[in-house]
Amino acid sequence: MILDRKASPVIHDAVEFEYKLPPVNKQNLDNGLPLYWLDAGVQDVVQVDWIFPAGLWYEQKPSVAHATAGLLKNGTSSHTSEQIHEALEFNGAQLKVSAGNDYATITLYSLTKHLPALLPMVYEIITDATFPEQEVEIHKHNAIQRLLVNLRQCEFVANQRIDALLFGEVHPYGRFSKKENIAALVREDLVTFYHIHYNLANARIFMAGKVGENEVKWINDIFGKPLSEKTEIKPEVFSSPVPAERIYRINNDPNGVQGAVRIGRLFPNRHHPDYTPMVVLNTLFGGYFGSRLMSNIREDKGYTYGIYSSLSPEINGGSMTIHTETGRDVVDNAIKEVYHEMEVLCNKAASEEELLLVKNYLLGGLLADLDGPFSILQRWRTLILNGFTEDYFNSNINIYKTITAKELQALAQKYFSAKDFYEVVVV
Image (cartoon, rainbow, N blue to C red; front, side, top):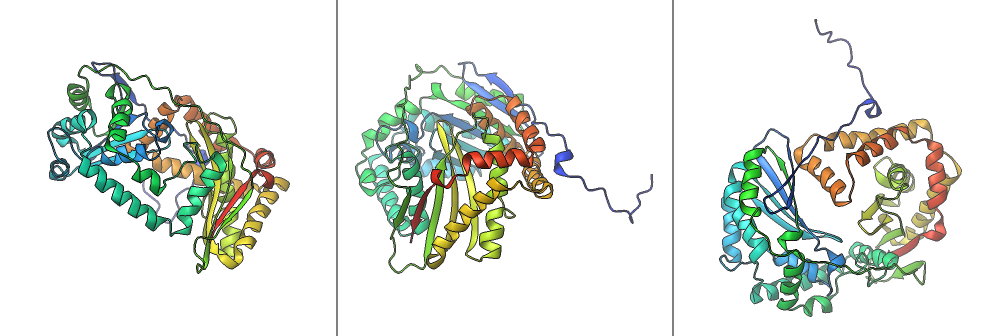
Protein backbone atom coordinates (compact mmCIF):
# COMPACT_ATOMS: atom_id res chain seq x y z
CA MET A 1 0.00 0.00 0.00
CA ILE A 2 1.38 3.40 -1.02
CA LEU A 3 1.09 6.13 1.63
CA ASP A 4 -0.77 9.18 0.34
CA ARG A 5 1.22 12.04 1.83
CA LYS A 6 -1.31 14.61 0.61
CA ALA A 7 -4.07 13.19 2.77
CA SER A 8 -4.23 14.31 6.38
CA PRO A 9 -4.27 11.52 8.99
CA VAL A 10 -7.58 10.79 10.66
CA ILE A 11 -7.87 12.59 14.00
CA HIS A 12 -9.61 10.66 16.76
CA ASP A 13 -11.02 12.02 19.99
CA ALA A 14 -9.60 10.51 23.15
CA VAL A 15 -13.08 9.26 24.08
CA GLU A 16 -12.92 6.87 21.11
CA PHE A 17 -9.96 4.90 22.48
CA GLU A 18 -10.08 1.83 24.67
CA TYR A 19 -8.23 2.09 27.97
CA LYS A 20 -6.72 -0.88 29.75
CA LEU A 21 -4.58 -0.68 32.85
CA PRO A 22 -1.60 -3.03 32.39
CA PRO A 23 -1.84 -5.83 34.97
CA VAL A 24 0.27 -5.86 38.09
CA ASN A 25 1.79 -8.99 39.54
CA LYS A 26 1.30 -9.74 43.23
CA GLN A 27 3.72 -12.01 45.00
CA ASN A 28 4.19 -12.63 48.69
CA LEU A 29 7.80 -12.74 49.83
CA ASP A 30 9.01 -15.67 51.93
CA ASN A 31 7.96 -13.81 55.09
CA GLY A 32 4.52 -12.94 53.74
CA LEU A 33 5.20 -9.30 52.79
CA PRO A 34 3.19 -8.33 49.67
CA LEU A 35 5.19 -7.26 46.61
CA TYR A 36 3.34 -5.70 43.68
CA TRP A 37 5.45 -5.47 40.54
CA LEU A 38 5.10 -4.85 36.83
CA ASP A 39 7.50 -5.22 33.96
CA ALA A 40 7.15 -2.26 31.61
CA GLY A 41 9.35 0.18 29.73
CA VAL A 42 12.47 -0.31 27.67
CA GLN A 43 15.12 1.43 29.78
CA ASP A 44 17.11 -0.49 32.40
CA VAL A 45 15.70 1.55 35.27
CA VAL A 46 13.59 0.61 38.25
CA GLN A 47 11.48 2.27 40.91
CA VAL A 48 10.84 0.52 44.23
CA ASP A 49 8.41 1.92 46.83
CA TRP A 50 8.05 0.87 50.45
CA ILE A 51 4.78 2.16 51.94
CA PHE A 52 4.26 2.44 55.70
CA PRO A 53 1.36 3.63 57.90
CA ALA A 54 3.50 6.53 59.10
CA GLY A 55 1.78 9.68 57.88
CA LEU A 56 0.39 12.58 59.88
CA TRP A 57 -2.73 10.58 60.69
CA TYR A 58 -0.68 8.36 63.00
CA GLU A 59 1.53 10.81 64.84
CA GLN A 60 1.02 11.25 68.58
CA LYS A 61 3.10 14.43 68.70
CA PRO A 62 2.97 17.28 66.13
CA SER A 63 5.74 17.37 63.51
CA VAL A 64 7.14 13.93 64.40
CA ALA A 65 6.02 12.23 61.15
CA HIS A 66 7.85 14.73 58.91
CA ALA A 67 10.92 14.75 61.15
CA THR A 68 11.15 10.94 61.20
CA ALA A 69 10.86 10.75 57.42
CA GLY A 70 13.38 13.54 56.99
CA LEU A 71 16.00 11.82 59.14
CA LEU A 72 15.41 8.18 58.24
CA LYS A 73 18.44 7.95 55.93
CA ASN A 74 20.73 10.07 58.10
CA GLY A 75 22.56 7.28 59.86
CA THR A 76 22.42 3.62 60.93
CA SER A 77 24.46 1.55 63.38
CA SER A 78 26.91 0.72 60.56
CA HIS A 79 26.88 3.78 58.28
CA THR A 80 26.90 7.52 58.77
CA SER A 81 24.72 9.91 56.83
CA GLU A 82 27.69 10.79 54.61
CA GLN A 83 28.42 7.14 53.82
CA ILE A 84 24.80 6.45 52.91
CA HIS A 85 24.63 9.42 50.56
CA GLU A 86 27.99 8.54 49.01
CA ALA A 87 26.79 4.98 48.31
CA LEU A 88 23.67 6.29 46.60
CA GLU A 89 25.65 8.77 44.50
CA PHE A 90 28.26 6.16 43.56
CA ASN A 91 25.49 4.00 42.08
CA GLY A 92 23.71 6.92 40.43
CA ALA A 93 20.63 6.26 42.54
CA GLN A 94 18.13 8.45 44.37
CA LEU A 95 16.39 7.57 47.63
CA LYS A 96 13.49 9.78 48.70
CA VAL A 97 11.54 9.57 51.95
CA SER A 98 8.34 11.54 52.47
CA ALA A 99 5.44 11.57 54.91
CA GLY A 100 2.00 12.45 53.64
CA ASN A 101 -1.30 12.75 55.42
CA ASP A 102 -1.82 8.98 55.62
CA TYR A 103 1.31 7.12 54.54
CA ALA A 104 5.06 7.50 54.49
CA THR A 105 6.82 6.43 51.32
CA ILE A 106 10.41 5.38 50.73
CA THR A 107 11.21 5.46 47.01
CA LEU A 108 14.34 4.16 45.32
CA TYR A 109 15.18 5.13 41.73
CA SER A 110 18.07 3.21 40.22
CA LEU A 111 19.51 1.44 37.25
CA THR A 112 18.20 -2.09 37.45
CA LYS A 113 21.67 -3.60 37.57
CA HIS A 114 22.51 -1.72 40.79
CA LEU A 115 19.61 -3.15 42.82
CA PRO A 116 21.73 -5.92 44.43
CA ALA A 117 24.12 -3.27 45.77
CA LEU A 118 21.43 -0.87 46.94
CA LEU A 119 18.75 -3.08 48.47
CA PRO A 120 20.86 -4.06 51.52
CA MET A 121 21.43 -0.35 52.21
CA VAL A 122 17.69 0.37 52.03
CA TYR A 123 16.97 -2.61 54.29
CA GLU A 124 19.48 -1.27 56.80
CA ILE A 125 17.89 2.18 56.72
CA ILE A 126 14.41 0.74 57.28
CA THR A 127 15.39 -1.66 60.07
CA ASP A 128 18.33 0.08 61.78
CA ALA A 129 17.99 3.88 61.54
CA THR A 130 19.59 5.51 64.58
CA PHE A 131 18.57 9.19 64.40
CA PRO A 132 21.84 10.63 65.73
CA GLU A 133 21.31 13.46 68.20
CA GLN A 134 23.39 15.88 66.12
CA GLU A 135 21.33 15.11 62.99
CA VAL A 136 18.11 15.71 64.93
CA GLU A 137 19.30 19.13 66.09
CA ILE A 138 20.42 20.10 62.58
CA HIS A 139 17.06 19.00 61.18
CA LYS A 140 15.14 21.02 63.77
CA HIS A 141 17.23 24.14 63.11
CA ASN A 142 16.80 23.85 59.34
CA ALA A 143 13.08 23.07 59.58
CA ILE A 144 12.47 26.13 61.77
CA GLN A 145 14.44 28.37 59.41
CA ARG A 146 12.49 27.07 56.38
CA LEU A 147 9.24 27.61 58.23
CA LEU A 148 10.12 31.20 59.17
CA VAL A 149 10.98 31.98 55.55
CA ASN A 150 7.81 30.31 54.26
CA LEU A 151 5.60 32.14 56.74
CA ARG A 152 6.52 35.38 54.99
CA GLN A 153 4.83 34.05 51.83
CA CYS A 154 1.11 34.68 51.67
CA GLU A 155 0.38 31.59 49.57
CA PHE A 156 2.11 29.32 52.12
CA VAL A 157 0.06 30.76 54.99
CA ALA A 158 -3.14 30.52 52.94
CA ASN A 159 -2.53 26.84 52.19
CA GLN A 160 -1.99 26.14 55.89
CA ARG A 161 -5.03 28.03 57.05
CA ILE A 162 -7.61 26.72 54.57
CA ASP A 163 -6.89 23.12 55.63
CA ALA A 164 -6.95 24.12 59.29
CA LEU A 165 -10.26 25.91 58.72
CA LEU A 166 -11.90 22.98 56.93
CA PHE A 167 -10.68 20.11 59.12
CA GLY A 168 -9.71 21.80 62.39
CA GLU A 169 -6.19 22.43 63.68
CA VAL A 170 -6.06 19.21 65.75
CA HIS A 171 -7.13 17.06 62.81
CA PRO A 172 -4.20 15.45 60.92
CA TYR A 173 -5.38 16.93 57.63
CA GLY A 174 -5.69 20.40 59.15
CA ARG A 175 -2.60 20.34 61.36
CA PHE A 176 0.26 22.59 60.24
CA SER A 177 3.85 23.12 61.28
CA LYS A 178 4.57 25.49 64.15
CA LYS A 179 7.94 26.66 65.40
CA GLU A 180 7.26 25.59 68.98
CA ASN A 181 6.24 22.06 67.91
CA ILE A 182 9.42 21.54 65.90
CA ALA A 183 11.56 22.94 68.72
CA ALA A 184 9.90 20.59 71.24
CA LEU A 185 10.88 17.43 69.34
CA VAL A 186 13.47 15.20 70.98
CA ARG A 187 15.30 12.19 69.58
CA GLU A 188 13.18 9.75 71.61
CA ASP A 189 10.02 10.99 69.88
CA LEU A 190 11.43 10.02 66.50
CA VAL A 191 12.81 6.68 67.69
CA THR A 192 9.46 5.69 69.20
CA PHE A 193 7.50 6.69 66.11
CA TYR A 194 10.02 4.88 63.89
CA HIS A 195 9.89 1.58 65.78
CA ILE A 196 6.10 1.52 65.73
CA HIS A 197 5.28 2.84 62.26
CA TYR A 198 8.29 1.80 60.18
CA ASN A 199 8.08 -1.81 61.34
CA LEU A 200 8.85 -3.73 58.13
CA ALA A 201 6.04 -6.16 58.92
CA ASN A 202 3.58 -3.32 58.19
CA ALA A 203 5.07 -2.45 54.78
CA ARG A 204 3.75 -2.93 51.28
CA ILE A 205 6.33 -3.00 48.46
CA PHE A 206 5.80 -1.83 44.88
CA MET A 207 8.27 -2.21 42.00
CA ALA A 208 8.15 -1.17 38.34
CA GLY A 209 10.53 -0.79 35.42
CA LYS A 210 12.43 -3.22 33.26
CA VAL A 211 12.18 -5.97 35.84
CA GLY A 212 11.36 -9.66 36.06
CA GLU A 213 11.87 -12.75 38.16
CA ASN A 214 15.54 -11.90 38.84
CA GLU A 215 14.64 -8.56 40.38
CA VAL A 216 11.81 -10.17 42.37
CA LYS A 217 14.35 -12.67 43.72
CA TRP A 218 16.70 -9.84 44.70
CA ILE A 219 13.85 -8.19 46.64
CA ASN A 220 12.95 -11.48 48.31
CA ASP A 221 16.57 -12.27 49.25
CA ILE A 222 16.79 -9.05 51.27
CA PHE A 223 13.24 -8.20 52.31
CA GLY A 224 11.90 -11.75 52.59
CA LYS A 225 13.87 -12.43 55.76
CA PRO A 226 11.96 -13.36 58.96
CA LEU A 227 10.09 -10.39 60.41
CA SER A 228 9.59 -9.12 63.90
CA GLU A 229 6.04 -9.20 65.24
CA LYS A 230 3.67 -6.98 63.31
CA THR A 231 2.86 -3.75 65.12
CA GLU A 232 -0.78 -3.33 66.03
CA ILE A 233 -1.63 0.20 64.95
CA LYS A 234 -4.91 1.72 66.07
CA PRO A 235 -5.11 5.27 64.76
CA GLU A 236 -7.35 7.78 66.46
CA VAL A 237 -10.68 8.70 64.99
CA PHE A 238 -10.94 12.40 64.18
CA SER A 239 -13.91 14.56 63.29
CA SER A 240 -13.95 17.87 61.48
CA PRO A 241 -15.76 20.58 63.48
CA VAL A 242 -17.88 23.12 61.66
CA PRO A 243 -15.79 26.33 61.43
CA ALA A 244 -17.01 29.18 63.60
CA GLU A 245 -16.71 31.67 60.75
CA ARG A 246 -16.96 31.27 56.98
CA ILE A 247 -14.60 34.07 55.96
CA TYR A 248 -11.11 34.74 57.30
CA ARG A 249 -8.87 37.67 56.38
CA ILE A 250 -5.23 37.59 57.50
CA ASN A 251 -2.89 40.55 57.22
CA ASN A 252 0.48 38.85 56.74
CA ASP A 253 2.36 41.71 55.07
CA PRO A 254 1.15 45.28 55.60
CA ASN A 255 3.11 46.40 52.54
CA GLY A 256 2.10 43.47 50.32
CA VAL A 257 0.45 44.15 46.99
CA GLN A 258 -0.84 40.64 46.42
CA GLY A 259 -3.41 38.49 48.18
CA ALA A 260 -3.50 34.71 48.32
CA VAL A 261 -7.07 33.44 48.02
CA ARG A 262 -8.25 29.97 49.03
CA ILE A 263 -11.90 28.97 48.83
CA GLY A 264 -12.69 25.44 49.96
CA ARG A 265 -15.13 22.92 51.29
CA LEU A 266 -15.01 19.36 52.57
CA PHE A 267 -15.68 16.79 49.86
CA PRO A 268 -15.91 12.98 49.95
CA ASN A 269 -12.97 10.79 48.98
CA ARG A 270 -12.68 8.23 46.18
CA HIS A 271 -15.10 5.80 47.83
CA HIS A 272 -18.06 8.12 47.37
CA PRO A 273 -20.06 7.72 44.12
CA ASP A 274 -19.89 11.48 43.47
CA TYR A 275 -16.09 11.60 43.50
CA THR A 276 -15.34 10.55 39.90
CA PRO A 277 -18.14 12.67 38.38
CA MET A 278 -16.75 15.59 40.39
CA VAL A 279 -13.33 15.04 38.76
CA VAL A 280 -15.03 15.87 35.45
CA LEU A 281 -16.96 18.84 36.86
CA ASN A 282 -13.89 20.18 38.67
CA THR A 283 -11.84 19.98 35.47
CA LEU A 284 -14.46 22.00 33.62
CA PHE A 285 -14.75 24.47 36.50
CA GLY A 286 -11.08 25.07 37.30
CA GLY A 287 -8.98 21.98 36.69
CA TYR A 288 -7.10 22.90 33.52
CA PHE A 289 -5.95 25.92 31.53
CA GLY A 290 -9.15 26.09 29.47
CA SER A 291 -11.44 25.99 32.52
CA ARG A 292 -14.26 28.40 33.35
CA LEU A 293 -12.25 30.06 36.14
CA MET A 294 -9.22 30.64 33.90
CA SER A 295 -11.33 31.94 31.02
CA ASN A 296 -13.18 34.42 33.22
CA ILE A 297 -10.80 35.52 35.98
CA ARG A 298 -7.50 35.36 34.07
CA GLU A 299 -8.35 35.85 30.39
CA ASP A 300 -11.40 38.11 30.61
CA LYS A 301 -10.96 40.06 33.85
CA GLY A 302 -7.16 39.95 34.11
CA TYR A 303 -7.28 39.60 37.90
CA THR A 304 -4.63 36.87 38.11
CA TYR A 305 -1.95 34.98 36.21
CA GLY A 306 -3.54 31.68 37.16
CA ILE A 307 -6.44 30.19 39.07
CA TYR A 308 -7.36 26.56 39.51
CA SER A 309 -9.46 24.24 41.61
CA SER A 310 -8.43 20.83 42.89
CA LEU A 311 -9.73 17.80 44.75
CA SER A 312 -7.68 16.33 47.59
CA PRO A 313 -8.91 12.81 48.31
CA GLU A 314 -7.33 11.21 51.37
CA ILE A 315 -7.90 7.83 52.98
CA ASN A 316 -10.14 9.28 55.69
CA GLY A 317 -11.80 12.20 53.94
CA GLY A 318 -11.12 14.95 51.45
CA SER A 319 -11.66 18.49 50.29
CA MET A 320 -12.08 20.74 47.27
CA THR A 321 -10.15 23.99 47.06
CA ILE A 322 -9.91 26.95 44.65
CA HIS A 323 -6.44 28.54 44.61
CA THR A 324 -5.26 31.86 43.22
CA GLU A 325 -3.04 34.85 43.93
CA THR A 326 -4.33 38.22 42.83
CA GLY A 327 -3.75 41.92 43.40
CA ARG A 328 -5.01 42.92 46.85
CA ASP A 329 -7.20 45.60 45.30
CA VAL A 330 -9.16 43.05 43.24
CA VAL A 331 -9.38 40.21 45.78
CA ASP A 332 -13.07 40.73 46.44
CA ASN A 333 -13.84 41.00 42.73
CA ALA A 334 -12.02 37.73 42.03
CA ILE A 335 -13.91 35.93 44.80
CA LYS A 336 -17.19 37.27 43.48
CA GLU A 337 -16.41 35.84 40.03
CA VAL A 338 -15.58 32.41 41.51
CA TYR A 339 -19.06 32.19 43.01
CA HIS A 340 -20.54 33.56 39.80
CA GLU A 341 -19.02 30.68 37.84
CA MET A 342 -20.42 28.21 40.37
CA GLU A 343 -23.85 29.76 39.92
CA VAL A 344 -23.62 29.56 36.13
CA LEU A 345 -22.80 25.84 36.31
CA CYS A 346 -25.79 25.32 38.59
CA ASN A 347 -28.20 27.20 36.32
CA LYS A 348 -27.08 26.18 32.85
CA ALA A 349 -25.74 22.91 31.48
CA ALA A 350 -22.40 23.04 29.67
CA SER A 351 -22.40 22.70 25.89
CA GLU A 352 -21.59 19.35 24.32
CA GLU A 353 -18.55 20.93 22.67
CA GLU A 354 -17.11 22.12 25.99
CA LEU A 355 -17.84 18.80 27.68
CA LEU A 356 -16.13 16.87 24.89
CA LEU A 357 -13.06 19.08 25.28
CA VAL A 358 -12.94 18.31 29.01
CA LYS A 359 -13.38 14.58 28.41
CA ASN A 360 -10.59 14.57 25.83
CA TYR A 361 -8.34 16.46 28.24
CA LEU A 362 -8.92 13.96 31.04
CA LEU A 363 -8.61 10.87 28.87
CA GLY A 364 -5.67 12.28 26.93
CA GLY A 365 -3.80 12.77 30.19
CA LEU A 366 -4.65 9.22 31.13
CA LEU A 367 -3.18 7.98 27.85
CA ALA A 368 0.10 9.68 28.75
CA ASP A 369 0.02 8.12 32.24
CA LEU A 370 -0.36 4.63 30.79
CA ASP A 371 2.74 5.08 28.65
CA GLY A 372 5.40 4.69 31.36
CA PRO A 373 6.09 2.10 34.07
CA PHE A 374 6.40 4.57 36.95
CA SER A 375 3.09 6.32 36.24
CA ILE A 376 1.37 2.94 35.79
CA LEU A 377 2.76 1.90 39.16
CA GLN A 378 1.34 5.09 40.70
CA ARG A 379 -2.09 4.16 39.35
CA TRP A 380 -1.87 0.72 40.93
CA ARG A 381 -0.56 2.13 44.19
CA THR A 382 -3.55 4.45 44.47
CA LEU A 383 -5.97 1.60 43.76
CA ILE A 384 -4.37 -0.84 46.20
CA LEU A 385 -3.87 1.61 49.06
CA ASN A 386 -7.53 2.61 48.78
CA GLY A 387 -8.72 -0.99 48.66
CA PHE A 388 -9.82 -0.90 45.00
CA THR A 389 -9.36 -3.33 42.12
CA GLU A 390 -9.01 -2.77 38.38
CA ASP A 391 -12.81 -2.56 38.22
CA TYR A 392 -12.63 0.89 39.84
CA PHE A 393 -10.29 2.09 37.08
CA ASN A 394 -12.61 0.72 34.39
CA SER A 395 -15.64 2.31 36.06
CA ASN A 396 -13.91 5.69 36.09
CA ILE A 397 -13.13 5.44 32.38
CA ASN A 398 -16.78 4.72 31.67
CA ILE A 399 -17.88 7.74 33.71
CA TYR A 400 -15.40 10.02 31.94
CA LYS A 401 -16.74 8.87 28.58
CA THR A 402 -20.47 8.84 29.23
CA ILE A 403 -21.27 11.51 31.82
CA THR A 404 -23.71 14.10 30.48
CA ALA A 405 -23.93 17.85 30.84
CA LYS A 406 -27.22 17.46 32.72
CA GLU A 407 -25.58 15.13 35.24
CA LEU A 408 -22.81 17.66 35.80
CA GLN A 409 -25.36 20.42 36.29
CA ALA A 410 -27.13 18.31 38.94
CA LEU A 411 -23.79 17.69 40.64
CA ALA A 412 -23.04 21.43 40.64
CA GLN A 413 -26.43 22.12 42.22
CA LYS A 414 -25.57 19.62 44.95
CA TYR A 415 -22.08 20.86 45.79
CA PHE A 416 -21.67 24.41 44.47
CA SER A 417 -23.64 26.33 47.08
CA ALA A 418 -21.69 29.38 48.26
CA LYS A 419 -22.77 28.83 51.88
CA ASP A 420 -20.86 25.53 51.96
CA PHE A 421 -17.54 27.12 51.02
CA TYR A 422 -15.04 28.77 53.35
CA GLU A 423 -12.64 31.56 52.45
CA VAL A 424 -9.14 32.43 53.52
CA VAL A 425 -7.47 35.55 52.14
CA VAL A 426 -3.90 36.35 53.16
CA VAL A 427 -2.38 39.67 52.12
